[in-house]
Length: 367
Ligand SMILES: Cc1cc2nc3c(=O)[nH]c(=O)nc-3n(C[C@H](O)[C@H](O)[C@H](O)COP(=O)(O)OP(=O)(O)OC[C@H]3O[C@@H](n4cnc5c(N)ncnc54)[C@H](O)[C@@H]3O)c2cc1C
Image (tube, rainbow, N blue to C red; front, side, top):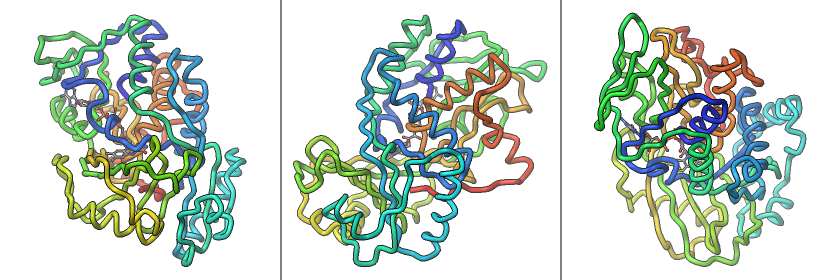
């Protein structure tokens, strides 16, 4: 998010300093599954994601760096009547907002699209062929180098340790490498966004949740064109990764925390679930596995834009597990809101003020 925003702002001649306490992309972004989809339950997320997909498609032209965006589609596999009902409403909304290529797929067609899929209990699926996967490393370095070309200074190994506030507004940040005066701060600290908020006396409601991913060795039964497949009830998902398969699932019972060690007991559960939904995966050997953090808000929606309590403090965080795919659109729209006072897509549904109003409507397509 920080690199995408640094690029969009520097491109419009804003003097940008990005501060990263580790290395660029070393946290959630570098550990994410690379999924890019438009099939959300909230209209605002669908609109945002339609723009993001366009930006992924134009990424190489824009930044000079290929994002390895492969539009293999996302297949949501539904096994509960209430989920089918919910996705029927989603489908109507998707078509209304212009996501014309999303469609229903029955169990037979699903098993032709994903030959390893067990469709015994499948009631229906939704499929959107323009969804897909991209490379987090390539997208991050593409934005970072394009931002540098436009004059942004990206500083790694520098931690923000304080925010100077006076007269009701941001005056600067204190870092492990000295002070920087600024009247505008974007909080892009992912799972650590609440800590940056606290430095400025603000309560930013973002909690860290550990999420796991495993990658198998070579696995020809899931070919390169196999769609990203999501078993919606269990949250299990898999997609081709190199010549193997990337498999992920959420441990919905785990409380928030910053631990990112791999919990091998949970991985066994994940593989047992995978073997139920795609029996061939039971024979797959794990090549590598890791965990990273989701940065979750109470309604599973991002926080984008100014925090009215403190002038000059803006958020680009709280993506709740969708930040890789949302960052391209979020960055462009935030730059527009800042510099033009309006953005081409309304991002008010993501405003920080919604928490005080108590009018939260949750995104339901969360995996
Ligand atoms: C296993 C897993 C799978 C996922 N799959 C997907 C997916 O398929 N698609 C998708 O869109 N999203 C996915 N996500 C979510 C996605 O990774 C995040 O939403 C996204 O990477 C958030 O980007 P970010 O830039 O906000 O956060 P980050 O990439 O975490 O960047 C925040 C940076 O802030 C730095 N930082 C924190 N505190 C300070 C400080 N005080 N001073 C300086 N720097 C600081 C951190 O070091 C970090 O590098 C997944 C996440 C996980 C863990």
